[in-house]
Length: 281
Image (cartoon, rainbow, N blue to C red; front, side, top):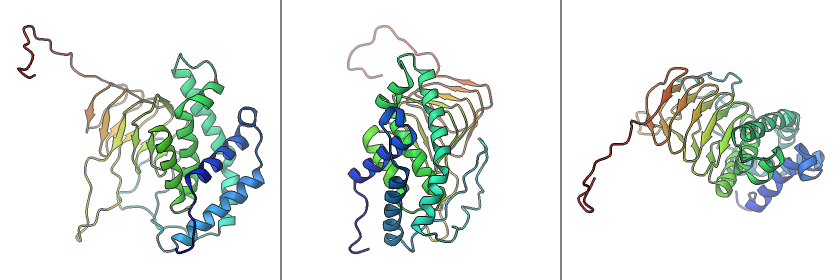
């Protein structure tokens, strides 16, 4: 690895800005597809050389909103490709990435009366920044690119406070309102039309270790089916399933399955008269 210069934050920002210009020239100004492919290939070449023996087997992407991942672990990685091969395949997938992002933008705008236009969402909302980074990083993750997908999503994390692992599977029309503090783990599966608010965590409840004490990379994060809304500061933990068209209230800690068309809320607050400051709760 000596002598290799990994992409800097500024370079990653510039790359994602170029992706935005290629996909949305009417908003961000035109961008060159050939320049994007060339710059991406250069980054991929660097990370391939930096980690030639350190590619973790990765989960296959699934277009099914609620498809599960095998409990036997992740499939073996595909044979290593060249940076040019990977960048060409990424460019072939770019229109699909753009289509997903348009659905994400529409979901945000449709769920926030303060949003006056799709352009406002793209220019002012952290949801768009986070999802642009995630959608690009996830495509690279599917193409078995090491390290770079994490660099990209961590850059979004720094900029927005939204932490989405590139391995997570997120369906179309994913809406984020506000967004700060959202955490979505690597094996989470999210269906279509899901809406989440700030502070939501899709995390692990516990980890499984092998006989030597090493943690196993097994499915450990929630499955959220289509058209679920999750309100602020709620934690969904473990390999649980939240049924479609459910509404999960705020400030909850959920470690069990929730059937479709459910509404989960806190109990009503208990109010007591005669409280004396300092007596405790």
